Structures are given as structure tokens and as C-alpha cells.
Amino acid sequence: MRRVSAPQPRGNVQQIPAYVPGRPPSPREDLVVYKLSSNENPYPPLPGVVAAAHAAVEEMNRYPDMGSAALYAELAARLDVPVGDLAAATGSVALIYQLLAAYCEPGDEVVHAWRSFEAYPIAITTAAARGVRVPLTAEARHDLDAMAAAITDRTRVVLLCTPNNPTGPALTQGEVDAFLAKVPARVLVVLDEAYLEFVRLDPSRGQALDAIGTYRRHDNVVVFRTFSKAYGLAGFRVGYAVAHAEVAAALRAVSLPFGVSAVAQAAAIASLEAQPELLERVDGIVAERERLVAGLAEVGWHVPDAQGNFVWFDLGEKAAAFAAAADAAGVVVRPFAGEGCRVTVGEPEANARLLEVAAAFSRD
Ligand SMILES: *Cc1c(COP(=O)(O)O)cnc(C)c1O
Image 1: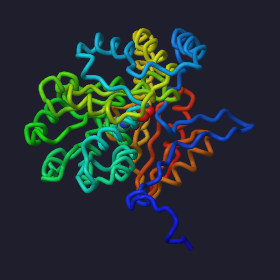
Image 2 (image 1 turned 30 degrees about the vertical axis):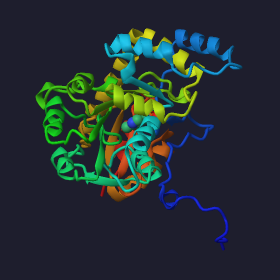
Image 3 (image 1 turned 180 degrees about the vertical axis):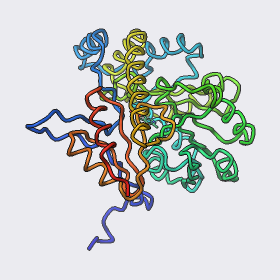
Image 4 (image 1 turned 135 degrees about the horizontal axis):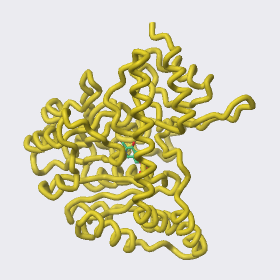
């Protein structure tokens, strides 16, 4: 029995859904086990990145640069945006929290697709805002017409995830332009581009989204990016927003002071400097993704258009069984109970095993 006199958190706190992290593999005697459950980059960091991080470690007695000045200067130059339009944070997950903290009163509405990134409902509930979930289309894409129709007087933010985690499809420039034309200027539209670097849109689907170009044309567009996926710095927690000065300032105002560590700042800068090598690795992951998708089609699996470093298996009630079969083959995937499994594109050996599991798996 809880005593009524005990301190009580706000009502929304009890409602916050748990984040289910991708399970790490348990070591096995008989075979190497691969973790394909968190959309991580399977490659270790490049040597220059490790050296920069080591140098920052030597100064751990000092606070980091709270203004992330060197990182902002590097990003501003590369993206050709004003420094005042940037906000760095401890991963782009933190940016979602910060945006909602800055713009939502309790009960305000946040429209997002579902299923999409599982951190969205968590952040929305933490902010005591109300999530408005708009189901994906049959092709596991955002239903932008329905999302536009879901906007009300209480809507403050729309979250667009492109490519969509966990299903894979990316939004096109035409889709986003048509959507923005319907959104009132007072509503912020987030373009969450955590997997941008992996996008290779077939021109027959439309023109690939240029999120920075879109932000330049629309005062209410906010772009979120991260160093966790293509750049391989998931463990260091650093991401950034590009937004018009007032929005970026609000994001910085509500941030945790000194949140982005000196090691993360140094590693992020070194990663940007090593971009050609990093993007070469991304090309390798994309090539593996294409091989995997083609291999799946050969054995009768047609997955939604996979534009991230992961593929989605629409399995319904068989999600847990598929995850168990993958487990037995030494690959850990991310099941979503009753819906499907998201599988990260990993090392060639891991992908080969996944293909074998999929080929052998009975769907009826
Ligand atoms: C992984 C991911 C992020 C970013 O994660 P951080 O590690 O916090 O930067 C943001 N959005 C989506 C959709 C993701 O999948």
C-alpha cells in the first residue's frame, strides 16, 4: 500500500512507456553472436576519431565547452547555416525532449506516425503532452494526408521520421512540400533524419528530401540529426538540430548545462573531418542492405522500402517466434510484440545468417 503522504510524481510520470532497448547478445561457446537490435554501426570508430577522444579524456577534470563552439563552427561551415541556427544535445533523443519542453503546455498535441520511433511516446508523455498517433499506410509509410488532417488548434509539433524507424521508407521532397503547405505556420514540423546517410532513393519514387533546403524555406521546420548511426558514435551521445534562430535558441535554453561531454564534442568534430572514410563505410552498409533485401525477395520476403541501416519484417503475431529463430542462429533482432521485427544491417556474416533464418521461417 502506498501512503498518501508519500511524495507523488506528476500524474503523467506513471504513464510513461518503458523504452525497450535492443538486447545485447549473450556470449555462446559454439558461435559468434551478432547484435542487430539497436541500429548501431557495426564498424569501430576511425583512428583519428579515437585519438581525438583520447586527447579529450586527458582533460576530464575540466567541464566541457558548454557552448560546443568548435562543433558548431564545424557544422555551420559544412551545412552553410548560421551558428545561431544550431543546437547540440546528448543525442537527438534529447532534442525531442527539449523541443517538447520548450513548446508544449500540458495537454498540447504532438502528431506523429505509428509505428515510428519508440522514444516519441516516451518524450511526449514526459512532457505531459498528448500524442496523436496516425497509422502508417499499408506500405509502412507515413500517411501525410491523415497527419495533416490530425492537426488541431492544440497541435504544437509534428514529428516526421525519415527514414522511418522501424519500418524503413523515406519521405520524398514532394511529399514533405505538399504536407508543409497544409500545416499552419505556428506548428513546428520536425524532420528526424537519424538515418539520412543511408538513403538511396530510387528516382522512380520521387526526389530525395533535402531537409536543410526545406528548413531554409520554412520557419517552422526543424531538422534533427545524430552522430549515433552512420557516424558510429552511439556510445558518446551527441546529436544536433538545425532550426531558425528562435527555435534553436529555445532548444539550447532548455538543455542540460554541460550535457554534451568534451569527449563527445571532440569525437564528433573528428568524425566530420573523417567524413569521406565514414561515408565509404556507409556505402558498404548500404550495399549489404541491398544484398539482404534482394536475398529476401528471392525467398519470398518483400520488406518495406528499406532506406535506413535496417529492414522491417511485418510478422504480426509471429514476431516473437521470428526473434527466437534468429536468436538460435546467433543474431539478436528487435521484436515489436504482435507487429514485427526490426533487423539492423550488420556484418556480412550476420546478414547471411539472417537470410538463412528468413528463408527457413514459416509464416503460416
Ligand atoms: C537512433 C534514433 C535517433 C537518435 O538517437 P540518439 O542516439 O539519441 O542520437 C533519433 N531518431 C530516430 C528515429 C532514431 O532511430
